[in-house]
Length: 217
Image: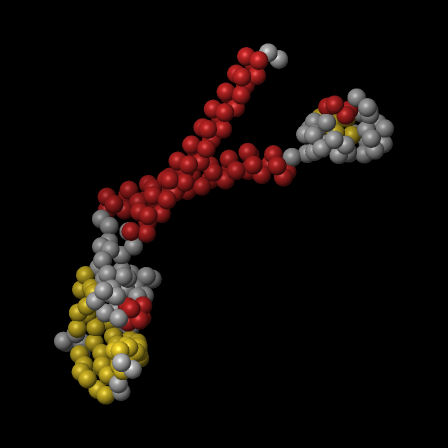
């Protein structure tokens, strides 16, 4: 083989390798974008419940250091944003996932005021009265169609990726038939004992039984 032919084959192999890497990279980017779209399209429902940054109205009885402080009811609830920038992080974590009408018997945390002084807060019978504002509004019909199309594309991409992985990685590396003599790719098997053998080793006869009759794979 001439130097020019070697260089030409190298260029072709390099182009194919780069193309495959670009294809895999593009697929990864597409999957990432679709997952982000899907994650941003989840509004309040009975599965996800209250989510971060939702605005909710709650009723509760509040105690500070064990002493009753104040309370709200269903007719006059307290509105808040489910975010630790507005209320204690422990309270936020307790609210996330709750459903409208659900009640938490006790939510308690302690604040270090400094100088050895600690204040204990407890919210008793905290109830989600209503959802004032959903941080992730439900998508409209057009958005649902677009999301469905993305999900179909994602499904097709997963299937194509799985097929590509099987054909180009799994089967050649783990499922291919190897010559039991030299470990090269087998092209035949002995018709007598069934031993796999490559084209180069067939001229010597089967190393297991000596037969020279083979079955092409």
